Image 1: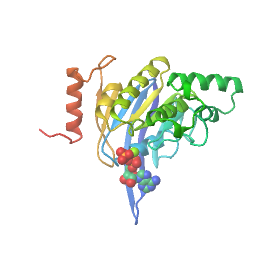
Image 2: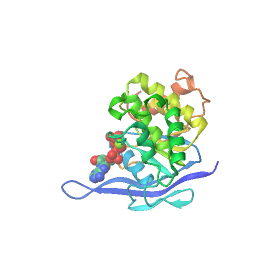
Image 3: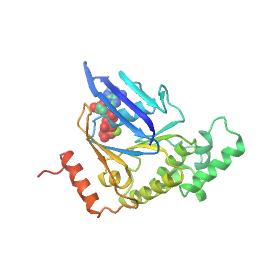
Image 4: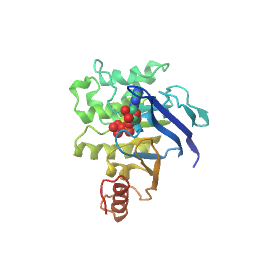
Length: 250
Ligand SMILES: Nc1ncnc2c1ncn2[C@@H]1O[C@H](COP(=O)(O)OP(=O)(O)OP(=O)(O)O)[C@@H](O)[C@H]1O
Ligand SMILES: [Mg+2]
């Protein structure tokens, strides 16, 4: 498979409150293949959101390079869409308008067609004219996803997209994401604290260290879909990852 995302020796630090610098990334390198889904799991504050910001062009590395499709990522672009931890749909416009709003330079008819297509894909066709406050948490999350997909990005960067949802809705969102990936796959980097979610969705899982972030382990999840968490391979991966994260000890 061809490489889409090529991260080479990326360094990033922030000014530390009260002086000095806070090193977050110290020489991170990895690649993500076309249409692959890589899940990042690691401790809070290790630099996952910072890394996604860099991948999506919202920040620049201090050193090193980030290439997508062979080109340097310099600014945010519709090629790689970031779904943030806090969400970013506009509360004052309808679901449909949230989608058409982000499609710039596209004829009105095509905008309308695409908005309908993606609202349907995430099961919100009946709520096209609803405002975000009239939607449930899971529906808002699906609207976030539709709004990212509607610009037909090559890459999706998802930062805990289902983090605020209840367990059942999370399970449903997993299935929906897998379904969407079957129909319209994107190269995806998914940050999650949920090890089951990583195992259910990812082609590879990167287990990250405390800050400054290192990739401690790379796990190939070579289990066919649909995956059962009761599969002995899934159970073994989970045990291994939780050990790596220091959540369970021998
Ligand atoms: N804009 C900023 N200015 C200064 N420090 C920052 C900034 N953004 C993040 N940090 C610091 O960088 C470190 C990494 O933050 P980041 O948000 O990338 O972590 P994270 O892995 O996404 O954490 P979480 O799992 O809690 O979301 C933290 O110590 C944080 O305080
Ligand atoms: Mg974060």
